[in-house]
Image: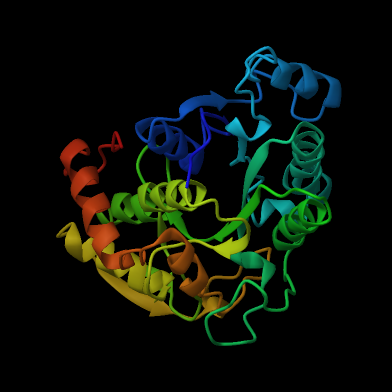
Length: 310
């Protein structure tokens, strides 16, 4: 069981997940380098090749092992509705870029961790999805993420780990939970969709899970989230109650909040195989949410109209 000596985290400077992954890997003793688009052109193969040259272990090192360097892709086009009008850009980031990283990792013998989404499913199963279940994305976003998965799985990458995750919330960047807490400080009531079911994922817990899987040399396609299903309404209501905001949260159907892209009505992720390989079961999302809300309240002014600093 071993972690890589070094990790390049693409999306590690600005991303909600990428920043947390950088912190978690660094704390685990991995030399973690956050990477942004300003550091290297993600779509220039030669530039990426040269960039990786500058971060590989010295070839003269007698203990040189290409697997000591891990490429972590936390870059994604995540504007689900906007992707319907910008499919080329969505596919560029969600399919072309991971495919390019995969080819470079294959050529060089590096490990690769890539994050995907629950939106590769259509929700028709109405039971927690296993990693091997049939996919059928309903949106351009989901289809572009699936294309990224398929491109990587089509390569011969012994160190490949693909983690499908969902409904991210965590410190450092705007997310659904933070937005609900902000609105609850300004309004007496909110209406939130109650007929879409998924798996909330707290980014520090997701990062810890990824570290554990890397340490245990887990590979293949897995699901990663906190334990337990939720609806958007349940997630919002729980956060607002924990924050003691005097705001009523009304449950509405998806039809009451129309969106450009179609969402799966049920995309809860089965974590059984992930828990086995990681050596632990991720904690329930309500426990993770309580931790996040407490941290948010510690830095965000409680008075109405004042923007939070989380």
